[in-house]
Image (tube, rainbow, N blue to C red):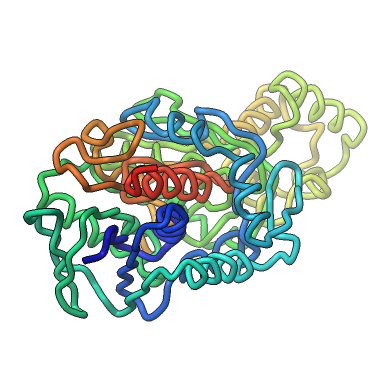
Length: 406
């Protein structure tokens, strides 16, 4: 009998297995893909932003608001850096974002695999878990590779995000069959689809801006950075950061709107004054010429159309009210959100196993003694910037140590 069975060989599963095995217990990882850690290879565009020096409770989301931070505090960024340094990963700091010195996600996976081998952890690949049953003295794990027994189980099977890497959401069903409740699972850190038909004409443009997300007219979140305009809507890190709120609003059949500010470094008063001064110094410029140098030409053409301006009309012929309308449009560009991209494009998921049914100190199930959880399978999701991997390390380490009785 295996002392501990870890279901899932992703970041949290590998961490849980290593943390448990370091206590001298027998551990076996069951991974349904042909190799472990596949999703880890794609993080940080292949460079693996494995954590972030800037840590705050608000960077982690859950219906059980304070749950994630309790685990992060137990095994945080300092402990994570020290853990990986001991395995051989020297980190580099880019404005708080930590990467391996080699800039290779494969290095992080390699040192984890080396530690798995050193500790004698068994790894069974192509071993999709079909069921977990409580039995006398522990659990029976029914997999496509056969039936196995274990004293304790750590369920670290991931979410539904990026299923090509192995996280297909099958772990949710395993937990539900054991009696656990689910918070609805929705795509997060994902692109947003918009209703308007002009996006194909501005697709491919990248612009610095601020995006604010409104649900039924109430602002839920905002973020600033490089926004990418696509043929279906909006993308980029700022959009990813607010996307969970859009997904929730759409799931609840509410009105979801994004308001884009394409001149975020100006207040509305400053930008209006800027445009009026520009008119005074360029009174004979046509509308098209007036906007040259401020925005991509395709965006300028869109402003002209939506503001009902004439491309060849000179600027001194516009009224103050018309200039104000143009300024407002550029800084308060409202677009209706009709959907998110699918789980295939999402980096993580909002929702998962209800953390109110999980011990906030040990990550052991409050319903099934001996069952532990780690990683994305729980109702926890972080913002972009290494926070979801930090959750994987923190929860995996905690679950592994606690299951091992450390």
